[in-house]
Each structure stands twice: as C-alpha cells, then as structure tokens.
Length: 459
Image (cartoon, rainbow, N blue to C red; front, side):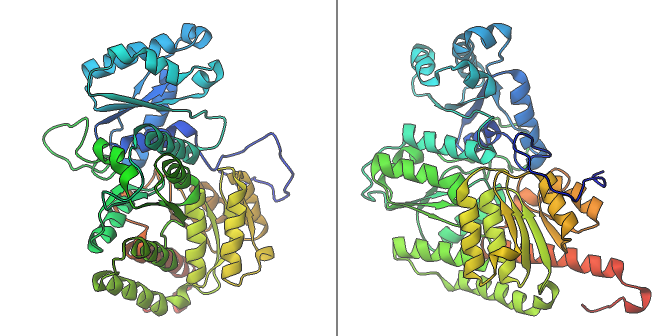
C-alpha cells in the first residue's frame, strides 16, 4: 500500500505521483455521450480509445460506445487525415448515428492534424442530414474537465443558432461533469418550477438506461440536436461550475448573444439556494412549496445531526467544481476543511476556495489547497496533519487504508462501488444523501473504535 509515503514534503516541478485527474479525451467523450444519437470518435490510436471507454464503463457500469481512427505507424508519421475520412465513411454506413463528435488525442495533436480542414474535405462522404463536429483535446494539457469543457464549447460554437433574444422562452443549463442522477435531479427541480430548459450535455437516459430485451446503441436520452441549434434563442445560460461549464456559456453568449451566468455546482443547501434564486431571477418563476419542503427537511436534518460533524477535520480532493462546492457544504455542517486539492490546473481554484473560506469566517491560513496537485502530496498533508474524514473518488481508498481514515466516495471516478451514478449529490435531495454518507462514515468509525462498555445504541 502507501504506508511508506514520507512525511517530508519536497518541491516537485517535473514529477507527478498518483495524479488527481485523468486526460482530456475522457471528458470530451462523456460530453459527446450527452447528445442524442451521437457517436463519440477518438482521433488517435485504438489503445487511447479503449482506455477512455474502459474508464467510463467502469464508473457508470454501462457499456460505453465510441469509435477510433485506429492510428498505425503510417498515420503517426504522415498524419491521420485519411484514417479519419475512412472512419467517418464507415461509421455512418455501419452505425448510422445522427452526429459524430470527434476529439483529438496526444498523438493527433502532436502530429498537428487540422480536424476542421479534414472534416470539410470529408463533406462529400457525410450523408445528407448527418453532422460531424470536432474539438481539440490534447491529453498533455488540462484534465478530463478541460476536455469536457472543450467539447461543450465546440458543440455550441458549431451548432447553436439564434439571436439571444429569448424567443424560445427557455434557459440553457450546462450541468458540468456530473453523474446522470445529478442531471436528473437538476431537471426535476426546473420542472417543478415550470421552467422550460435545454440541458447540454444530458447523459441521463444514456449511461443509466434501463435493462430491456433489446440493445440500443443510441438510447433515447441525450440533448436533441434541434434543441442545441435552438439554444441561441434562449433567455439565458446558467453554467454550473466555472471549470467544466463556463467556457461553453461564454461561447454561446459570444456567438448568439445569450446572457451567461456561472455559479457554483449546487452541492448543499447554500449552493442549491443560489441556483434556484438565479433561475427565479431569470424566469420570474417562484420556487414552489414542493421544493421548499425538501429544503426544510434538509435543514432539519442538519440541526438534528450537527453534533456528528462539529469540528471534524476533512480532506477533499477531485474535480475543481465539485471540491469547491463540497468545501462550502462541509463548512455549513460545522466541519473543518483542512485540505482541498484538484489535479486540474487553474488559479481560479485557489481564488474560489479562498472566497468560500472567507465567506465562512475561516482563517485560510489554517487550511492547505492546491490546483494541479497530486495524491502523493495530498497523502503527505494528511500524514503531517491527520484528518477525521477523506472525501474523494475511488483512488482515495489507498490513502484511507494507509492512514486508517474513513473515505466518502464522491466525484469521478468511483470504480469500486455501484449505484452511485443513479443517485444525486446535487440539490436538496443530494444534500440529504451526502449528509447520510458522511454521517454514516463517521459513526461507523466511532462504533468500530469504541470499547464494549462505550458502545452506544443511540448516537
């Protein structure tokens, strides 16, 4: 295990140990899956595509379909233009998608393939009524969150139409890199407010599709192409999380004039309040009692269980939008966020974490936080200052085992537990679920450590 990770922290500029991220194409592939009838296409080698599909399949426990340009030595030297054109011809002939979303890999980026030119040259072989879009996702820059952002941005830049005057009466929602259960929860909140909307991407009904007697390569879920095209006629766009979603909303505002707003991912009561208030401000629709009732239940739970959380120290790692929102949430529970780390680069992470701490009246000097960090450093932080709880993805289990610290699985990827993708962590219902998970982890540890005479029935 990681028992021999040293306490002494040394500066490392050219070495990453146990990355707290994965590569851009995975995010681009996931975003593409959120478009109805879309075939994600990896412009690179078979090995890259296989890894990306495997990683997503293990997290969602649903078969992830994607195609590849299948680079060989020749394409690696002379470019993959011919491979991509042949791929597109075969994809439409064999798999018949409505749209193909092409993303690059390290190999095609290093060669310098110009996807826009290659796809324009392939226009004669693209069937009438079918579409091909593309985005640049070099793995040696950014992370899977960057790739997700780039695919959403390119999709809107290439497909959205309109003048941004709100003609369709809708609002656009860019949900960020979250599970389909989270997207479903956000949609249900909007439906309860009677707000018409377009969500892009929308992987609900795609990577959580039901088991039937027939295999569907393109499930009924995903954002419809006509709705993406109509996104330029919406009243406004709300980006949930600045890292994964804001670039797409700004791109749509630049192209079509649709006003854009970026807010925190709605994890916890405060962030969900801000999301609903923003929707209400844009649409003029009030928040119905049906939603307020659930909020009241969450607040009641927080009051009833505050003694479980008060003063508990926590380390949080994962995707930046989720770490920022989770930091705010644990503060509202009375916990002490000691360490916050993401592998996705960006100075905005530090600034947003500092604002969350300042707003809560917490001295930021008592916490450590870093973008473009890795799990080796995160482990060293915990070795030097132990915490009561770790919140992060499956890769945190090794640190949790080495330091004998409870782990609450949250974010992407979760490879060693199931069902999580169907259940929300956003909204008020998501807050309930997170409180249950955090409380259970802490109380199970208290029960485990208690002597027989101190084992309580009621806690």
